[in-house]
Image (tube, rainbow, N blue to C red; front, side):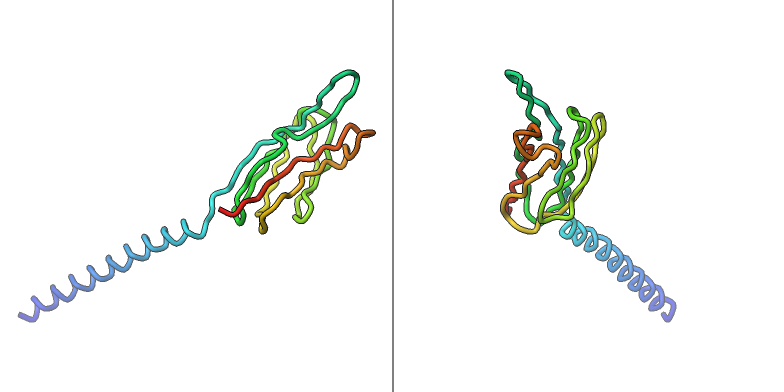
Amino acid sequence: MLKSYRFWGYLLICFALGAFLLQSYLGKDRFSQGELKPVQEFHLFTVEFKSHGTEVYRWDPGTIVVKKEQPVRLHLHGLNGAQHHFSIPDTQVRGVVQKGQVTTVEFTPTREGTYPLICHNHQNATTQGPMIGYIQVVDD
C-alpha cells in the first residue's frame, strides 16, 4: 500500500511540474508578444526631378504614417544625388545616404504629430530643395 501512495505522489508531482512548465512557457510567450511590438518598415528613395531646366530633390514617398510607441525602421535608398546628409529632429536619427547604397535607421516615435525628415544638402531653392519628407505619427 505504501508503494501505491508513492506512485501516486510521484505522478502528482510530475503532473504539477509539467503543468507549471507548460504554463510558464505559454505565459512567457503571451507576455513577450504583448511587450514586443512589430517593427514598422518603410523604404524611401532619394529622387531628382528635372523640369524646364530646374532640378529638385525629394524623398519618395514624401509622407509616411506610423504608429506611436512602435519601432520604425527606415531603409533610405540613394538613387539620385551623390549624397544626402539627413536628420529627423526631436530624435537621435541622423546619417548620410550615398548614391547606390541603402542606409537603414531606426527610432520609436514617442509623441503624435509630424516628424520632418530633412536633407541638409538640399534645404532651399538654391540647393535644389527643400528636400523634406514627413513622418506622420498617429496613436493607434
